[in-house]
Amino acid sequence: SSFVHVFGIDMMLAHRFARGVSRVARQDVGLVGRRFASRGLSTKLPSGCDILPLPALSPTMEAGNLAGWSIEEGKEYEAGSVICEIETDKATVDYEAVDDGILARILVPAGTPNLVVGTPIAVTAESEEAAALVKDMDLSFLSASPSAPAPAASSPGEETKSAGAAAPVSEYLISPTASFLLHSYGVDVNSVQPSAKTPTGKKIITKGDALRAVSGKSLLPAPAFTPKHVAVPTQAAPAATPVAAAPAASSGEIVNTITESGGQFEDEDLTSMRKVIASRLTEAKQSRPHFYATIDCEIDNILAFRKTLKSQLGKAPSINDMIVRAASLALRDVPRVNCRLEDDGTVVQNESIDVAVAVATPTGLITPIVKNSDKKGVMEISSDMKDLAGRARQNKLKLDEFQGGSFAVSNLGMFGVTDFTAVISPPHSAILAVGGGRQEFNCEGDELKPVNVLTVQISCDRRVIDDLAAGQFLECFQLYMSQPSFMSL
Image (cartoon, rainbow, N blue to C red; front, side, top):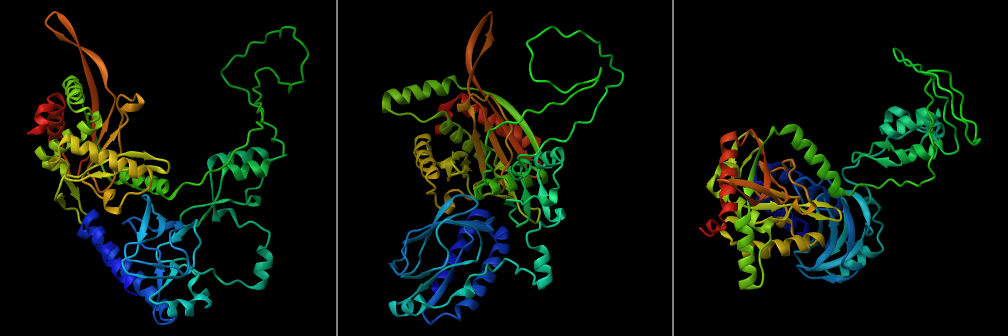
């Protein structure tokens, strides 16, 4: 029983650390509610046994996928052992035990997707005797998801009526492409079986569903269309080799001809991470008044500085490491940019400068955090970034290594992008979009001097950061980038 209780306490502390006390208050209520629900079910288990529910491993997590079990059923585990891997809305996270115990019964097999937070995934036991009691016990009362509404009971007549028939189209969502295809082939939307669902369970008719429905059918005749106010000259067609007859068209009539492709298409489900990225950034763009400011930075001195370090130390930080360092010092000099907006509308100064850096992984973007980056030298930042980026691509980051942060940096310069606009990711109030270096020419007297320049653009939440603070931040950032020796001050 202490497993769920202690883990709940740990998660509350982790949430406070990542998002702040006020934002976590609602999470605490949810965790407590789920814990009491689990205890209610646990009273039906033998003494010494307890339910292991799917935990909320991030403040925004409502559901997750059970990626795999690290402990076999019936085996003992120690405190700190990884019991299973859970794919959250952020990354795949190891679920560690805080007490010794036995994994008495696995309720959910590895690979199960879309489990609601609080769903019982296993039963743990404190002793071999308790584990033996639950081994062959009927645990069907644990199979229902705690948050999933039970289906409404229907009469036998209604079941017969609904069997084999599609639900009314109002119960579905349909993509624009699917709607166009079905309309073009004259297929009734209600006859199509959806294959996808929204996170809330509403069914979606996809393009793939429509392609299967129209397979083997013919297009409806295209309506004749004569453009008005356009004179269409009549010309004699040149002699050509006979080909298959084409549809006849009168003068001025446009004939639409569609060639069907024999290619195969497959709809790919979004990962939990990509769903949350889409949801949160859409919400952020709609609810946060973005404004943008751009500045060019000369980087010749940084390139020379890196060359010196390479020759003297045998290694050198990347340009991105230097950018993180410069941004951290600019945040120190202009603390207003290192603030966040709380749910009650108050602006709060972040306790530390923690820069999140966007890293691409096979499942989506994740932002590992370089903590206290203003107090670290550029070589220490470089070491931290190599470690964090490597573990991010292996889904081995800990919760506090990618949740929270006070500022973000996104660099697309390595792809040849010169500049771009980034969307602020909560709880940050700003993000710095970095482009690639390029060569330009400056006039010095009568001579043109080549210089290396990169462009950065800051996106700010206007409720927290005003134009003056954004300009001061970029001015400081530009100074540090042009004079890397100042980064040691």
